[in-house]
Image (cartoon, rainbow, N blue to C red; front, side, top):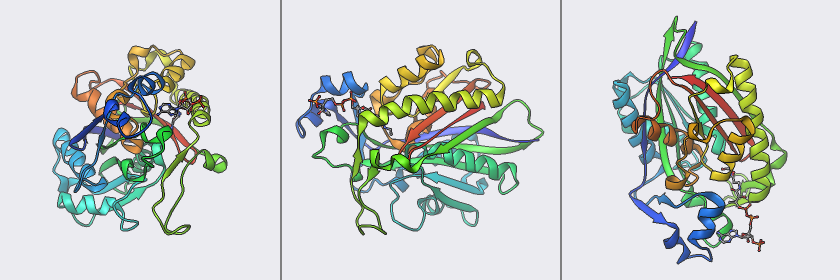
Length: 320
Ligand code: UT7
């Protein structure tokens, strides 16, 4: 049996941190409203010269260091983003170049906030099927560049950043690695969360539009359902999970999902207060944070989960 084992994680944030109070000087909002409704206290915003590729490369380098592998040992890069540096080529190819590797597989995956889960699923399948031996799976975004900074209902919610993991294919591994994953999509609800532009429709980049309250309702239902599916497939009881690392959209969604599943809040990694919603970067950013601060350790059973535009949603269970 071939398993994809997580060797190391890394993350990167832009230099500039913007607090709720600073935002309140630009749009009609308050620190109290943002904290009460979302749990967000600050976010990082990319400055000049900071892009999805630069943040992704920094996170990837740190993940390689933590994994004890050289970037040239990586033969597969799967990068999840909805905010690529260019319409093409894939940002993954530019990360490959910046890391100094050549010739391996490198491509982007686009599933918005569920992007990292989709990228993990694709990389895991490719490693299991012998299409690579060591993969960098990256979630990286600069959502600040697609926000309507006049729209208080969305611009206070998002931030920029990147997270990365190194996965290695191991023959005969029975303990560690990715145990089970489930991914879903339903294009029916596009209007609830989308960007109003694109190369083939308007010829512009567009701005993010969201009906937050409706997305919230779908998120809690879909996430609880997909978590149940993964637990069932893995034959694991909810009590056996050591940590849940969820997509960081809103502290209230994290609480409601945990309650629905009967998971104690202490087992849920929360970074939305510091990073806000960084879309595809949020799960690997939170995972790296909790590994580096010593909460998540080797041998722990960890559930990753996310839900986002599309809608797309998914979950993945792995033993570190
Ligand atoms: O990552 C992809 C998945 N995305 C999500 O999961 C986001 C899911 N949704 C949410 O997190 C929440 O729905 C929001 C945080 C977006 C909004 O919270 P809510 O409790 O659902 O608020 P609401 O949209 O129902 O708005 C309540 C009120 C409205 O005023 P009225 O109509 O009641 O007078 C809004 O206009 O809050 C107002 N409001 C604000 N007030 C101050 C909306 N945004 C703001 C703001 N500051 N930034």
